[in-house]
Length: 175
Image (tube, rainbow, N blue to C red; front, side, top):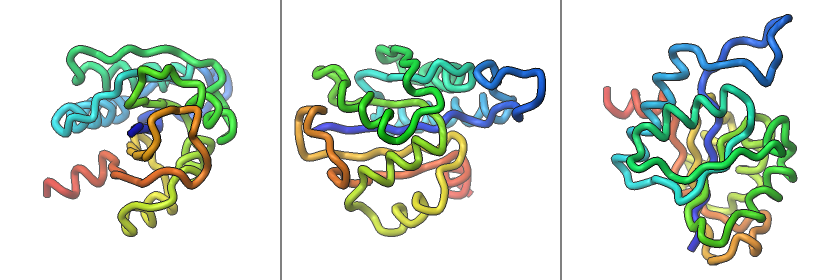
């Protein structure tokens, strides 16, 4: 079995003239949300074997605050192909993942991340799939399980949505 964790970067500074998009960093809420998702992952035994992260400042920071909760921090690498990536580019990065990464995490951006999730999911809890179909919010975490044991066998509609959470849904569950 393989598990894929797709994680949209947390809330970042708005795009403004004079700030290079690649350099946009997280706002305070984004740092808190990334840490909250990291703590959730730790509590639920969801640490990846490997993380592949877009080179953008906001994804790198998201990983930093998330990984701080995962002791020891999983191996991570930056993939330039994930910045402004199409769903097919993200799909290719996943398919080329190291064979020893049974649980792989990709930290990247919308709309590509949302679209690749919808492309890969064939089954799973109906309400979670409907919520995901509507929106992948900042710091949204998608966990997809696959019945095969080789990333090279990845194909559309081959996964089962195991869970979909966001900082907002975690807050709602505790209130």
